[in-house]
Image (tube, rainbow, N blue to C red; front, side, top):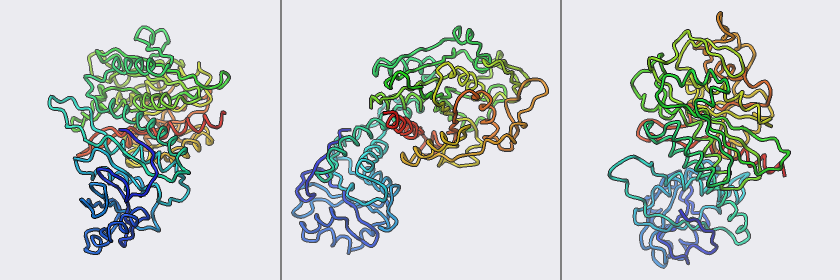
Length: 495
């Protein structure tokens, strides 16, 4: 998609389609009023006939409006003017783009003029770009008959002349995040027989080549030398060899301690010997979305050439019920030396993450954030809207919560109290890998916290936000916007 920043009045623009807004009560925006005036009240006449009220996300396409050189005018409902906010704006942009007729190749958008509290032109343009890219995303399916590509390939975003510089910067910002989100979606949507640990390693190498990252893809023998017994325990039931992927984006000042992102990369999760139910098990290809979000975030900061030091660590393998797989009752020795009694082999994500979190110590990080589709319990607690956030440092948690609000990729701060730790007690090892049904997402985070004593750490449980089920089944690319915004704000502070 090609975005361009332009200035001018809507009634003078030649375009396949002009997009303008209508508030509830049939109230036209300023751009819509200009079209209405130039067309001898053609828009008002249509609204008076009751074809549109202006309810949020409703749309109406008008063809060959009198005295307007554009081929079409698309009216998009904005809802109640007094309640209009960033969420309404994003929903309206998405609805408008999805409602564009198939023949539209270029569209002109006149929506950044809308007043939104605490939102400047940079924010509105960047959000618009991200939403357009999300609305036009097509799943890269493995089909003999490919989906017909959309005709739309040019978007003109109209702003005031004084806003040009900020708007141009915002386009680059929005496109960078959108590119990262698209990569994360693509990886998640691939079938697990293609998106294997080896494939993820190759994708990391490709990113490194494209953006100048340092990259290492450690193989099984290397992982054994590191003493990652917990990670290897999960991997031992699969014919697919494990990989430990390490990416380094070193564009900050040399003394700057890096932020480390650790992504869970279970490319398929059967549950192992503690086998999952068969229904919807195909969705367990999304159990590598933590890894996908790290790769997507690195693509975004690579596109931005962001002045920060960041490291990505991705432990990746399959969790399979082979004859050699770990069993309930087995005890694993982690890289840290702590032993783990495996009571449920379907609580495997924490078993690979704990070794990756220990590995992260060598980078002397300023902060470590792990991202994982970790627990169904988090979905029960929070649903599919926010990601669950746990942290051993409130200041770090606040940074991530703020980044989530700014990027509209929200998280919710969950407790990590010492009270929960006793649920992980084991008679036979230093800890068990599960703590029972009560507070399952919290005890999972408590387990990880035992490997993060040497640095500031946060954990994002994205089990409810990484993909959608049902008719809209597919990866969401979350939390790439949150993570990228978090790193962007850190980079600004470090200047």
